[in-house]
Image (tube, rainbow, N blue to C red; front, side, top):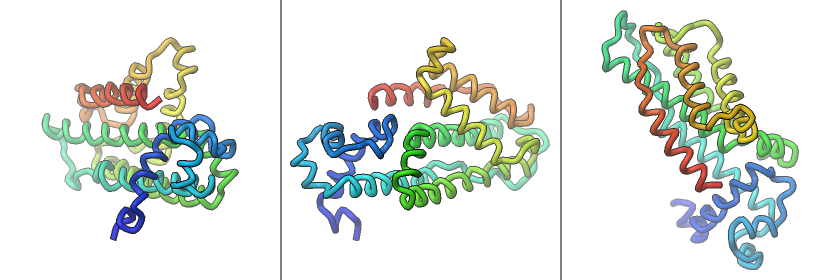
Length: 235
């Protein structure tokens, strides 16, 4: 039996919580008041209390959504381990497959970083440490899936074995967080798409052996166009 079957208000609650995400991404959780939550949800405070008993319930349910979000990314979008067979000279089809798998990993890092802002993570850790632990566990599983992917690429001679795969993930997380900062982009006179495309290309040349690099970046470019449009409407 699903949560919606047990709780007929579940679907409506989820939709209301989604409206709250932009606020907590920018402001964190500790300063959130019920008045703020109702305003973000575009409902009256009285109506909001039909769905949520308290701020703590809002935070708990919101974190449940984040944990499900990360779990779904792992199940539906994480790239699989690369082929166990070493290939001396890749065909065009093999180049396409492996470069698209890396594009998939890059997209996942963007999604994780976009939804889990520094402000949110730090505030959650200080205000709701027990919930922070649950989120940290989900993040750990998410990262382990990507580590397995990069490790398999190193084992098959597709990726350089220069550094620990954890370093790749830390590097991508830190740089993407910086690139998503509108103030930094403005100071550098760069667009978000330009910054993310430049970083994507730099990471490809840092991670892949040269013969495995495919220069066609149309897939990731199309994804970034869609992401930026969604980000603008989301804000």
